[in-house]
Image 1 (tube, rainbow, N blue to C red):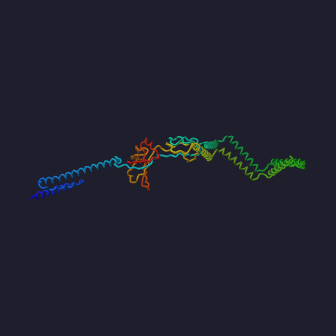
Image 2 (cartoon, rainbow, N blue to C red):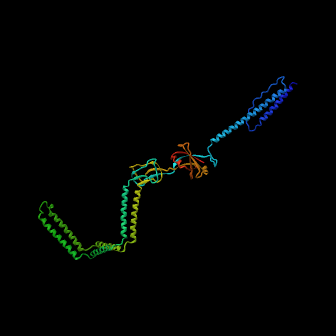
Image 3 (spheres, rainbow, N blue to C red):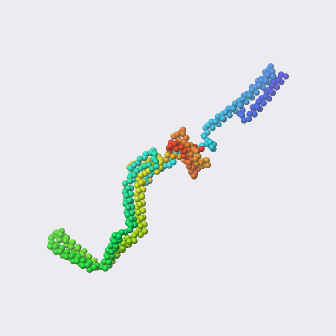
Length: 434
């Protein structure tokens, strides 16, 4: 009969233990704490059954409470750890666009000048003045180089002389002839007409007598010279004596007089008659032009010559002006390719000018094209100023994509002109689009 209280205590202990395990197993979604091992208190003789039951029932309850407390602490620690991790992730995340809530897109590029102008010579010549050096600031119209103009000035003077001659010819054509001009032209016509008539009618009696007289004089001269020659013909040096020379001259004059006499006797040939008629026709045409004045076609022809001469003067002046090379735009000199004393030639670079405005061109992938727009905000970072951010915006979006890389060229321009002065072409840049 003493064994029954012990059996009842054992049964009660098992029932309580089952309840504790069921209660601890219903913590859905919470981590389960590892239960500590349960030590069964052995039954001792003389211990009341009630005290044993109380001790047995108290031990599982305390274990359950300890288990619940451990689970609660573990859950609290896990929640705190997750909150700290989320806070760290939020603090490490990049800034987002307040309007769209999207993180900025980062791209690499290079700072480049908005405009680059290579100044070249347009004419040839030696450089006499070259005031620029690398880093010099120039304004539009400033002197870049002065070339020698000696040859160009001579060409201009020649063109000016041609223009003066053409202008005088035009004035002569347009001016009405005076009475003295008409009288001179009429006298020329009369003289040409008389010469033509003489050619047609043949030699006159006076011409024949004159030719015959000249022939007889020549024959007499030969007779006199021959007599003087005969006096000294035995001299061994006869060839060097004056009598020999006089005989030769007299003989030549006789031949000329004989030819003239024969020509007069024969009369004018057809060639002489044609030449006389041509001179008469020219004299009559000149008189007619003076009387009628210049024709419109003649005036137009001379006016065309004047215009051609004016164009020659303009080209000479243009070449002369190109000998003074000036800056076409505002900028800063980045490269010098000439010096005083060197020869400049058309198309040969002298200096390279960079504009103070800069830009960054980046390649944006095709999938981001729909997110881009003109005027979209951007920030620019460069290694030279690691702690500084330069504000910018999208100024150009290329109308076509690169088929090889499937990217579009996007140009970013700084919005602050003061900040843009710090960005030098060639700097490596990182651009963030918002």
